[in-house]
Structures are given as structure tokens and as C-alpha cells.
Image 1 (spheres, rainbow, N blue to C red):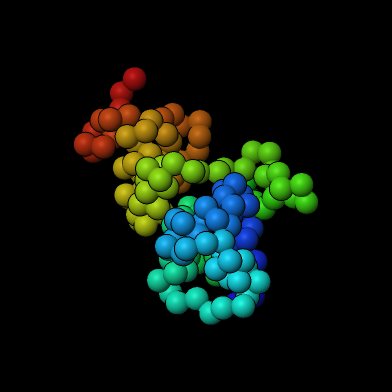
Image 2: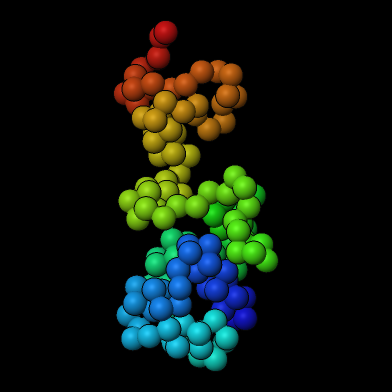
Length: 145
């Protein structure tokens, strides 16, 4: 559980939220509740862990320390001693983008390839030199250039 409390503080700083701001986002009256959480002075119910994760734009497993993430993603970056985020780290603060990313992560390979095709990105499992998938790929047709 100690990792949970440290991760809440870490991702709060990454999101550039004060304890007061995070408290308001998750339904607490003031910053003291978040300070107590970050110090490990309280046990959190699952509903609050999920609410905090959503407010910080990470999933609950990341806060709990359960998931390994590739380098350079929001979940694997942490601020340095000055509070700066590593260069090239993906920080997503727009809730709409978070929703899209979370939906993509839940898809199987076929679903992810459909999304990638709609965006003109190479299919997973293909080399990046094989070209981009176009809208025709979404209908099961060959993309003839």
C-alpha cells in the first residue's frame, strides 16, 4: 500500500495539481485529506482510488503499482527533484484523450488495428516500412496506392 500513497503524490505532481485541487476533484473538502493520503495515514476504499486515478489521468492499477509500462509513457515517467517531467514523456491532461487511450488499451489486436487504420497508422505486427493503412483497410479491402 505504501506504493499507492507515493504514486498518488507522484502523479499529482506530474498532473501539476495542488493537494487542494486534487481534493476538490475527488470530493474532499480541503487539502488535508490528500496530505493524509499521501502520508499513508488513511486507508482508501476502492471507489476513492478509482476517483483519484481518474482525476490524475492514470488507471487505478498504475496508482497501485500493479502495471509495468513502456518507457516514455505517462505511467512510467516521474518528476525529477525539481518537479520536471522527463523530456519526451507522454502527459495527457485532456479527459477526451484519456478516454480514447483507455478505450484503445481495452481492445484486442484486431480492434487496435482498426483504430490504427482509421488514423492512417501501420498495423500492429507489420513493419513501419510496409505503408500506412487507409480507410479501405477498415472495410477489408486492399489499399491500392
